[in-house]
Length: 142
Ligand SMILES: [Ca+2]
Ligand SMILES: [Ca+2]
Image (cartoon, rainbow, N blue to C red; front, side):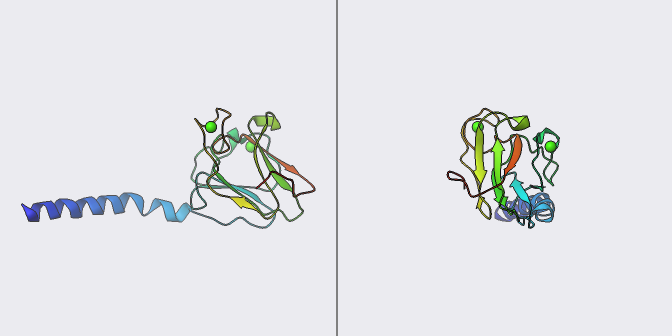
């Protein structure tokens, strides 16, 4: 009986290792190149998207994991080389309020998440467009 349980446990470990290990590390990329404004699916070790300019609509953008960016950014880094603030808006085409913003050289991981993605509540999983504003830093931004 004891031997049988051990075999089951060993098989379970092999299954978990086989499923989880290969996919994640290859795609995880916490870096954000100079001049870029980067967003992540969850923490800095998850799927990443990098913008060099403003982007009016995240609905046609995906993280490097293939997952949609719209209403899905939970962490961000600002690596501007010309003092631009990253403004993340609730709606496409830079409409609606600012969900959150990141000052030059700053970053934020695991933004406050309230309710559901795209419901206009909280900061995580809400951004639908990115507007770059010159003359940072701005008060109230990360
Ligand atoms: Ca876009
Ligand atoms: Ca929400």
